[in-house]
Image (cartoon, rainbow, N blue to C red; front, side, top):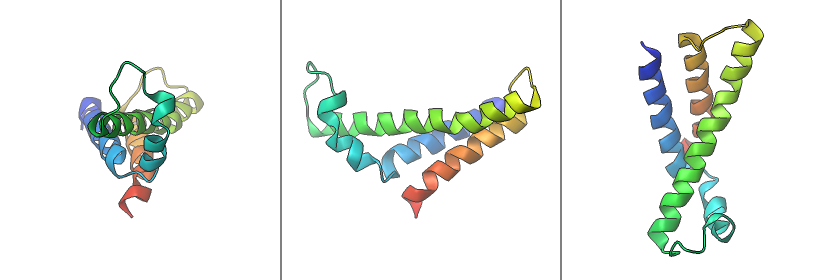
Length: 99
């Protein structure tokens, strides 16, 4: 499996987490904090924005264990093992929403 294919799987998992995460209602309630004033606060804009914020946050947080692994092992480039660690972390972050 190539790293590009694994990255597509990571993106799919993080997008899924953007819809099913238990944090989605909290981010939705906090919309006045993150929503710019020039954007109309319609329900669909708030739902898509909330989903996008949770998805991107999941993507960034799940990359931390892979980065730590690469640093500890002294790797110069991201390889298949690092990508699988990233995928595993994304799956672990998505599990609370699926349960």
